Image: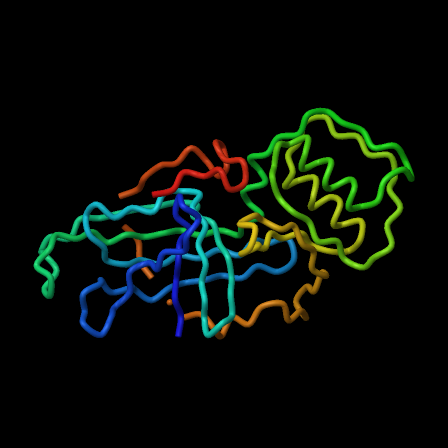
Length: 233
């Protein structure tokens, strides 16, 4: 069974409306998810009925639990459309809400780096990443893969964490991604091996297929975000 949650301002997971046995909560549409290969990012979209005052803002964290297989997303766009008739069970006015999702790694585009330099052969990969987090004011964690790494001289002038981490990951033949620490409520930067067309990173059979509906234009992912300092309900 698939259950979808969002993280509210109190850092609690709240279930997104789905059809219950008593039909008291609105129905969820089929969902569409596209899984990228290597640097191509995963994307997703789903729609659901909800009361007119129900709203999940851009940059919210989404968790999908599909029979204990967990995947995290970030809301890239939030749309809504008024229903012409009330809900036939509750007789309440509702909207169709559509959330467009992206991989969490996308939020790192909003973390700009001040100019900085790393002297050759003076830092471990973990030290470099933690210093980059500090410089960019990003309160996140990191899990380093078991690889050999000798740092060349690194100089960054005008860039962001997203571009830097993909560049660093390419030197160890890996891809960066963000996971979520349920205990600390922080993002964790992790790395996975490059797999290309022969890879087996994702089991897309666990997902199902949607629709579109008046757009709320956001300020862009993480423009006002410092990791978990996000606008929530």
